[in-house]
Image 1 (tube, helix red, strand yellow):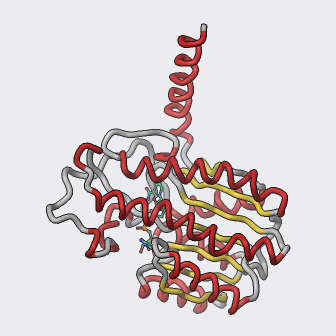
Image 2 (cartoon, rainbow, N blue to C red):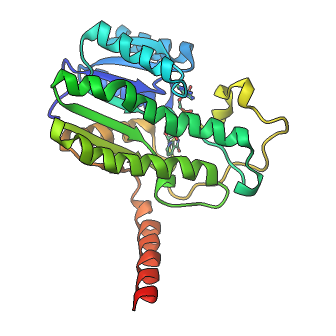
Length: 268
Ligand SMILES: NC(=O)c1ccc[n+]([C@@H]2O[C@H](COP(=O)([O-])OP(=O)(O)OC[C@H]3O[C@@H](n4cnc5c(N)ncnc54)[C@H](O)[C@@H]3O)[C@@H](O)[C@H]2O)c1
């Protein structure tokens, strides 16, 4: 995709952090933006701020874990502006603790938002984007936790590995339709992710408080605007992986060296 002027972009989790920065970056490029978030007030604030600066944006209260809610989001986007060119499946939540202590509700909440949220976005938007024959781009926000496994992040790792795998396949599947795919894989970003519990539905809360403090992330903590700039660059350039931190290179290399050693040891 070459430019964003006049294009329609939908961003889930657009009320805060990386999603907010993506929504504002699209608006600066003169795209029309649908800001979707489970926190209706946050979505309104971001869309209102864009409009106050002369841009075009609408807020839509959306729970990405609920297919009907994401279909309603797609209906709203297509009925308002007639097309969608960029879909950012960005909403996500983090939780910490060993897999041996993860509760069923932990799995349901994290998979519901981080994985089903992305799947619902694809189900609700992609067939209509294909039918619109205007090409476009899908951005899925995974994490470096989708490529490197860390102790104490197992549930989150599971959701994000799935999003990376899904994105790698989606890129191949959508190429014939002129729809590109990018997957964002950051280390630390200065957002509200450590307060993810604020949006956890009452029905999926644990009876006892979660164990232990948040896992300390390696590397620098980047500003979300920086991640958004890199992502828009990746959309323009048609790049699949948005690897935001160069510190990721060493652990990635070590992971693939471990895999290479395993192959050589077992097959020699
Ligand atoms: N911040 C980091 O260090 C970091 C690193 C790697 C990946 N990520 C990923 O970036 C994405 C954005 O997170 P962030 O860091 O900006 O955090 P954030 O908490 O600042 O923003 C997440 C947004 O998602 C919304 N949200 C939560 N549950 C939702 C639901 N069910 N439906 C719709 N919206 C929902 C929240 O209200 C919030 O506005 C997530 O997918 C996260 O896993 C973040």
